[in-house]
Length: 216
Image (cartoon, rainbow, N blue to C red; front, side, top):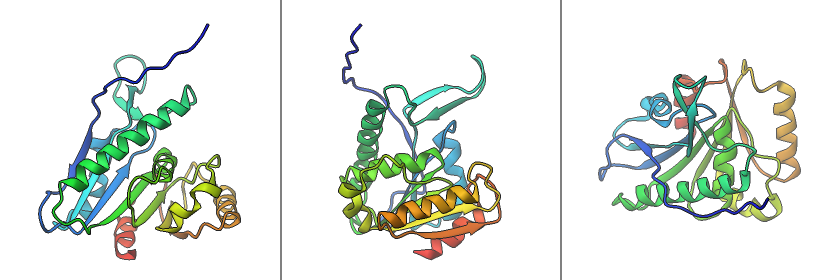
């Protein structure tokens, strides 16, 4: 048996919170976690919708029923099956979303923030390592850099942006030991990162998001 892969046209979607106007000063690209949908995930960022901020939520290309055959529909960015092709596809997709949004803005000097939540953290890290888009700030929320990244080649990309990790002190998926290991891992590769902690679980926390907005 031989596997063969072909490239096909595919319809993908993303959602926008805010209006595309001349007053936009910053754009947030926010990537959801495993088993979420972008149209629900983007609602977490309503607090940023101030008339000067555009929030953009792309959706993972792989949708499925959460339980059985008729439960709620969710999406993911990739699985371990044919993972390199999935990564290639979502990197191309995110590049297209970025170009589509930025080209629609008259103000080409907007500040660009990229936020990945949970599984979305590895997604945005691999996307930005592709080095096709300009980003000012990277936020890793309840997740981390994927350990299989080639930091020798990609470090120059991440050195050009401010990186912040945001983690709840009751996150059920991230132990304190895992957090400490990630910080040591990044220190080893000389990746500078700031850490924000909040009172909460594996979630987008409104108060932490307001704090983060003032951080930049």
